[in-house]
Each structure stands twice: as C-alpha cells, then as structure tokens.
Amino acid sequence: MKPEAMLPDHIDAVQANGLTVRKGSVGAFLASWRVLSDPSQSDESRAAAKEDLIALIPALDALGLFVVFEARDPQLRELIAQGRGGA
Image (tube, rainbow, N blue to C red; front, side):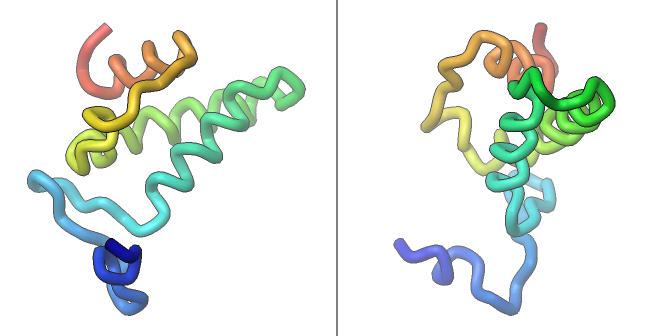
C-alpha cells in the first residue's frame, strides 16, 4: 500500500482506536529517540525529547506499531512500556 492511500495530502490525521494520530507521528517518535539517545545533546533537549516520545506512544500503539516492531534498545523498550501504562 502506498502512503497516500493511507493518508492523502489533504488529510493530516486519522482515528485509530479512538485516538487521533497525526501525520508525522512515526517520524517524530524516531527523531525524539535520536535526540534522547544522543549523549551529546543537552539535558534539556533530551528531557523534552523523552516527554515528546512518551506522549506519542499511545497513538502509535493504537496504530499497532509495537505489535509489528520491537525496540532493540532496552531503554527504548522501557519507555514504550511506560507509555503503554506499564513499568
């Protein structure tokens, strides 16, 4: 399936299991992880990235992302569990 079939250019969000998932959520999650896992980033940048990453987890979970993909990094797995209401 092509991305535009899932989310055409004129649509910015979809509903998944009662949650609004905005276009770009997966990319924002990945970008936040890159900042959070980079020790050269400031503590403030890493804290903001962690907050943003955790906030995205319920929507990505509603899409089924974590059923298909499993994080290899233990810290990321812990954050995903936290965002899913565990750990």
